Picture: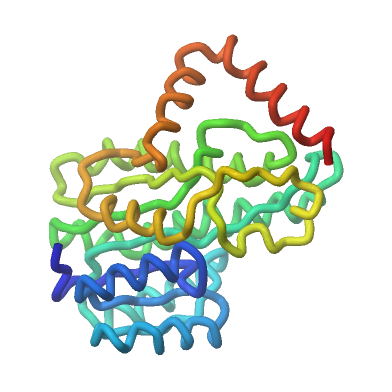
Length: 262
């Protein structure tokens, strides 16, 4: 697929899934807008993208701050006049029992992971609706379907992202604008650098950021509401949704046993 002439905005683009997604879109000749709070890391990514001769715009922005998002979107639209793909990828998690986690830590996860996504969508959706084309890709997690012990704030933000996306998916039917959620299992990124994860059980099943980035690119032109990666995990989600009274005790038991070993 050739994205020549297309403008792709990626939040959380300074590392991990966001960075890898930027590389893949640049290879497909898209103009890429890199959004993150870390200017130095963004400029490093922009330097890496220069070899693909893709036009790159660096926007330092904390997506949890709606005023900053408004300024960022204004900058993008003034430069390019359009936006074709919005990848809402910025997010983080904190590990710990809800009783032990500060309420501010729960609020901050919701502010970045969920509200940041809504601020960016609100900022760019009107232009997409006006041009009757565009696609929103929301990077969630399998944690949008399973409540993981000691990850209540993160799970809540991703459940919210999936519910928001499903609602908007129905609203956008026939508009020319699409929305797709990418829900991976654990990914090997800096996500786990937060000190709170020192106490988390070490699971071996994890995807590379490049693997998830391929799903993001696929999602950018997909008619589907959700792409789960790896696809086999969709079976587990189906069982959980269909037989929750059977699956929830099993899932809870697995996580509790794993946690008890740490």
